[in-house]
Length: 128
Image (tube, rainbow, N blue to C red):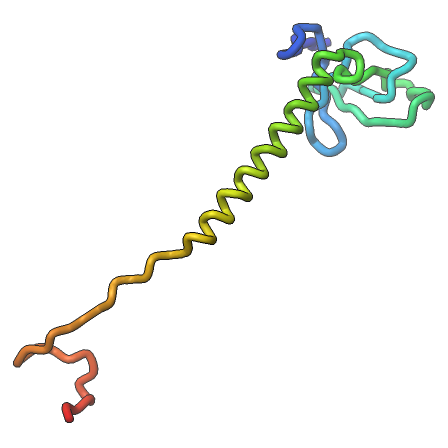
């Protein structure tokens, strides 16, 4: 079993791929109160799916607990990450509104001075 260390609390965890193709950290020991069925494929990658509590695990699957549910420090860190994402989204929306208020500078006005022998843009145009 390939076990990693949690970056927040330092506990041993398993990284499992969810059905939504995201990574989820799980506690490595089976837990009867867990709500995640995890299985290991032939390449050694763990796959996890969330089920209602109390659902028995099938033969190749083990019932595990999500790490954020069992570790209070990591659960708080996940909440702070969500808050940081909300702040970043609000800051970028505010910057976008400011850009829209400033608008764009007008382009330079093209002025041509006509001298004798100068090429005209529209040769069919006659001088009055």
